[in-house]
Length: 308
Image 1 (cartoon, one colour):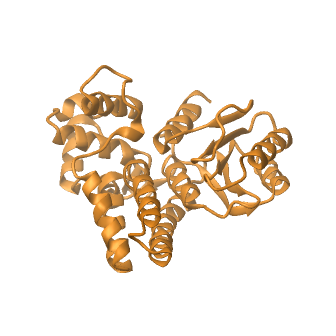
Image 2 (cartoon, one colour):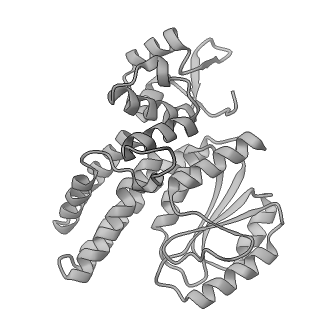
């Protein structure tokens, strides 16, 4: 199998949101999920199959037969979901625009938990939704809209700074608790460096990017906020990193950000892709790839691993 990171079927069932008994039936009838055997004889499954199975389940729940969707590549599964969500031809809907039934309501429920300072309830809700949707959809459909809703509520005076900070910190804790164990098990994936530029203190977007990349099999060096440009480049060189991923918020100095990105691009090896995301990320810098959704980030890494 492409990935050596393997898990037991119980863990795969939890990540995919599919009962163990159903996975065993699918494996027996359709060969999905595919297993490998340890020297002990125990069956193990590539962690990378969790996202694929989760999307298969969504399509099966929507009326597709298992034989139609099981075994389809991840990109094709996403395309089918995009088409059905839009009710139009392929490619008319951006992945970040897909909203499951109840997602908007779920974001509103998170905001209410934040407003009531129910940290435990908010953490439980986030962890549960992470398991239900998977890392990428969680980031695009729930976490991103939630952060925007928090900002709008703060601007409208319906939520306090303290409530907003407490909710953001809980989201950071949930993200870190999910992606760090995944990243630790990625022993053969490409290295990716995650950071924010000097003066940039916001890193929730970076946490969500880390979760997306960890689930996609990358090995991560997470530098976090306020990292000097030269140090980012140094780490990327030491790890022979496939990419440097930066989160740029709307609050930074746009001119300074552009200058720092140009300088960083010049310091990085040509083979190292410089990726930026976030509301403050420029879209027109030569040699800098701007990504607007976490599903696009996952697709980029998947395509590179397949083609490379």
